[in-house]
Image (cartoon, rainbow, N blue to C red):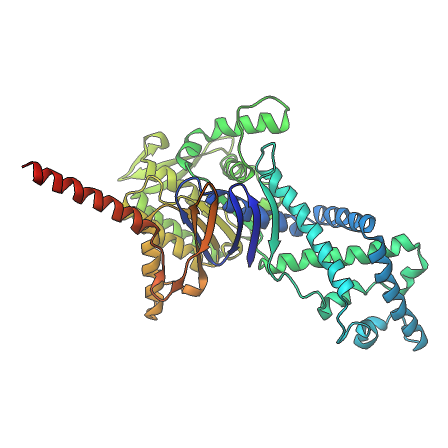
Length: 466
């Protein structure tokens, strides 16, 4: 799926294709995190609309009312075409209960016919829907200004698609005995809901999104205090110094819910529906992290209030988290979340700076974990500054090109990568070429060359002084 943004902070325009594994690379302050934030919130909002029927119905009704108010002439034209169809059905004396199975009567006025007026109208409905989603995304930044101007989806649907027209014109004939305004609303609501359904399908029905912010060590050690601040601010109306974007708040909320055992209805359903296959895959991923990065086991201990504390167990000794290494604290959230995920193959992970606090050797292992996560069916988006992670992912692409059976191999077709670069106080986003040898990127090479050149120059000056 391709998302295009316009005027996202310093990013004037960018188009990103979200694949099984998507990488954002580049220097600091190029707004990689902003783009990751937008993609996470977009998936989350669409998933929430689809999974929560009440929210879905209210949102669809809200859009439908807006369309009804703003496009009176277009709706009248749509209804006139619908009346033509109705009259033809009546002339042929087709029973009301049978007409929905009649492709001819239902679509006759559109087959092999381009109707630009309706195409523009339907696209306007889609734009209005995306505008409202964009507002929700802007609100998720929790700042008093607009961060994102416009959001577009490439080729969301073919407007004159037979299924779409069937939905748009499937209002039973009996409804035309009702008030004109009620009829138009029902038809428009059909169209809006069809757009939302197809949008969810286009996202492959992913139903869970998890965001792992940078600086996870700080969140792990101060989780309770930060969560208390958010709680005071959000539910008690008290002033809090906690000012975070919604993806980070979601991370803290989910982590806190797991620790406190607070399971809402959705989590309750998820808790009982974790299947053995998913559990086995998650345990394999957890073991990989414990064996290759943490070098120990993460143990859980619940108190009488069902509150969970975590410990690092090494050689039979349980260490409090504040005594654990920063590598352990950075990696801990992945383990905690993996133990509580309903369906790995329908989950989106947005991971900021997975290399943080890791030795280069551990960064290579983290890259392998990311590949394993993607191969397990999850959709993974990563922002990174690490040459080690990028090069190890290239090795995994090469493994796949050799057609070797390997759990770390990944197809180049399942990977997309983008370079974020500052140019004259504006960020450009460039899609990086990917072939059987991996991702082509000289971004890190430029820095290394500069460093080596400087080292050579200094060495020569030292020799000259001798």
